Each structure stands twice: as C-alpha cells, then as structure tokens.
Amino acid sequence: MGRRVCSALSVVVTGEDHAPYSPGLMHRGAAEAPFRHRHLLGIEGLSPDDINHVLDLADGYVELNRQAEKKHSLLRGRTIINCFFESSTRTRTSFEVAGKRLGGDVINMSVPASSMVKGETLIDTAMTLNAMHPDVLVVRHPESGAVQVRAR
Image (cartoon, rainbow, N blue to C red; front, side):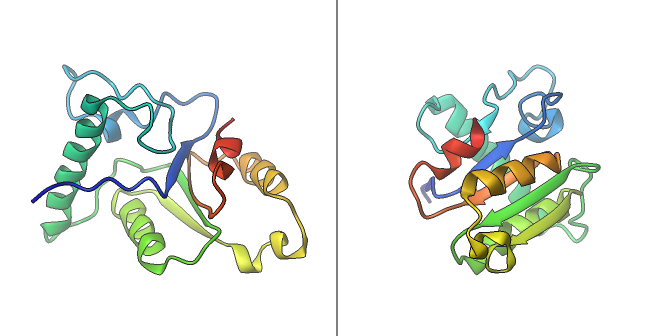
C-alpha cells in the first residue's frame, strides 16, 4: 500500500526555548539525525529522507494505536492548540486524539466562538495564541499562506 502525504495542515512549534520538535517525538534513537525543521508547513523544502522519516515515525504511532494501552508520555507537559478555521471533524478529532494519546494537554480553539467572528484579524488571533506560549500549534486555514504568516 502506498503512502499519501497531505499538506493541508501545518504544525508550528512555538516558544524560543524549544529545539525543533520534542526530541523524543521526532526521532527514535540517539544515533539518528534530528529532524531539523522547526515548522512543518507542508512538504515543500523537505528532502525525501525527511518525508520518509516522518512517515516512518507515523508507522510507529500506528502500532501504538493498536495496543490495548494507547497512552504515552512523549508530550507530557506540552500544550497543543488545535486551531481549525474550516470545518474538519475527522482531522480535528484525529489531532486531538493523537495529542492526548501522546500525553499532551490539548486545547481545541473554536473559531465560530472566537473573536474572529467579531472582526479580529488572523494576525491578532496569532498574537493572542502566541501570548499563551503553546508548545505546538496545529492550524488548518482555507487561505493559502495563512500559516506561513503565523510561523514567522
């Protein structure tokens, strides 16, 4: 079965004191080269080795999901905010379940209940979320380039 890569979502790791991603999350062992990208905004700019690395890690997490005990502590103490600006129940729920199974504290931002419906800009929302110092921000936005603005 072939692998399919989707670039509709972006993961932004925030905070100035963080290495790119959690060390235990993005590599399996000490001999392995670390994942060198701070943000994962799509597959552009990733080498074939980077893409295979991410997909191989995903395969390992599939195995975790098949076990009776699905809870892991890789993201213990980390805050993850899922920010979906367009409806996507399956994708949002998948990210929420993944974050919780990896031990993270997951917050789902409800855009229809946010200040954006009152006219707050994407930049204002990004600044507010950044002020909360999340460790990971998962963004799904219909506008091309919106997540690149947030990643800066």
